[in-house]
Length: 420
Ligand SMILES: Cc1cc2nc3c(=O)[nH]c(=O)nc-3n(C[C@H](O)[C@H](O)[C@H](O)COP(=O)(O)OP(=O)(O)OC[C@H]3O[C@@H](n4cnc5c(N)ncnc54)[C@H](O)[C@@H]3O)c2cc1C
Image 1 (cartoon, protein in one colour):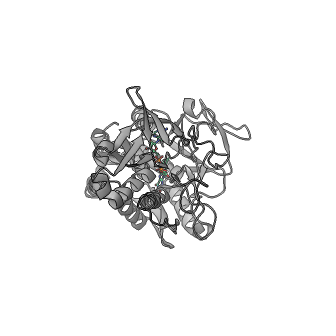
Image 2 (cartoon, rainbow, N blue to C red):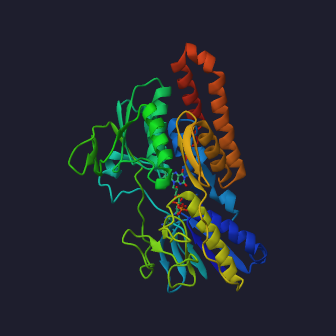
Image 3 (tube, rainbow, N blue to C red):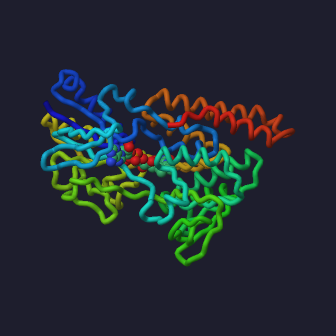
C-alpha cells in the first residue's frame, strides 16, 4: 500500500486532496493507496470574506467548511509536532491528547502561515488579528461591545484596506462616528498590485478616502501597545483598538531542518513543488517559497496561488505514485481584487481593471466560485445579494430613518452567526 499524507487543510491542502482523489480514486477505493489529510482545526477558513464578516454582512460561519464532512473519513484532526523525514512518519497529537504516528510514502507540507506575532511585539496582548479563525471570532464578539472612538488598522495591503473599509462601514451602519486610521509603511496602498496598476491602486485609495478613512503613510509599526501602535520613530498612534493585517509569518516543523528554507522560515520548493533535493516531500501554499514560472520573482502569498500550487502538488504526487513523469508549476496568475465597503472595490482580471460596483460584483462571484463547496459559495452569494437587495429596497425608508435601518441589518447578520 502507498500512503499519502497531506499536512494542512487550508487552500493548498484541500486542492491537493481533491486532485489526488480525482486521479487515484480507484486505487484509493481498492485500498492500494491511502490518502489522509491532517489539520489542527476541523474546518477550512475562507479568508477572502474577512471584510464582509467585519462589516457584519456575513458571519464567521459563512467562511467555514467542515473538514470531516468534506473529506469523508480521510481526515485526521491533530496538531503536527514533527515530520520525521528519515523514518517517513508524521507525528501528531489529537485533541484528546493521544500521540499518533502516520507513516507516509509521500507527504505534502501545506501548513500555511500565521499572524506576525514574533515580528510585532505586543500583538498577542494588545492587538487583534484575523488569520486564525478563533482570533477572528473573538474579534467579532469584541466588536459587538466595543465602545471606543478610534481604531487603528495596521497594513497597507489588500487585507488592511479591506479591514479599514469594513470597520468604517460597520460603525457607520450603527450610526457611530468612529475614526478609522489605516497605517502603511509605504506611500501607496494595495501594495500587492503590480506597479502597472498604480491607477487602480489610486482609485482604491480615493474610495477609502471618500469613506472617511484616515491614511497615515510612511509609518512603520514597531510594536503594539495598550494605547495603540508604536511606530519605529517612537511615535504612538492613539487608538482604542488596534487591528493588524500586515502580513504573516511561518512556523517551521520539527524534523524538516534539513530542508532548504528562507531566514523567515519558508521552505524552498523546486519548479515541480518538491522540497529541493527531496523526492517525496512536497510543498504548496504560504509555507512554500516558489519561484514564479517564466521569471519575475516569487509567487505571491495568497489563496489563489496556494490553490494552484496545491493542485499541481496533488497532481504530481498522483503521477509519482503511478510512475509517470511530474510537471512544472506553470500558473501565470489571474488577477487581484479588494472588496471595499458599500458594494465597492477594485479588481484586476487578466490585466483588465475594474472599480466600484462592477469590481465588487466580479470579486464576489469569483470568490464564491472558489469556495471549497459549491453549497457554501451559493450560501454566501444568497446572503450577500439578499443583504444588498434589502438595503436597496429599504433605501426609500432609510431616507426617513437611516440609522435604524443600519442597526437592523447588522443585528440580523450577527444573529445568523455560527461560532466555530
Ligand atoms: C485577513 C486575511 C485576508 C485574506 N484575504 C485574501 C483574499 O482576499 N484573497 C486571497 O487570495 N488571499 C487572501 N488571504 C491570504 C490567504 O488566506 C492565504 O494565502 C492562504 O490562507 C494560504 O493557504 P494555505 O493553504 O497555504 O494555508 P492556510 O490557509 O493557512 O492553511 C494552513 C492549514 O494548515 C493547518 N496547520 C498549520 N499548522 C499545523 C500543525 N502544526 N498541525 C496541524 N495542522 C496545521 C491549519 O489548521 C490549516 O488547515 C488573506 C489572508 C488574511 C490573513
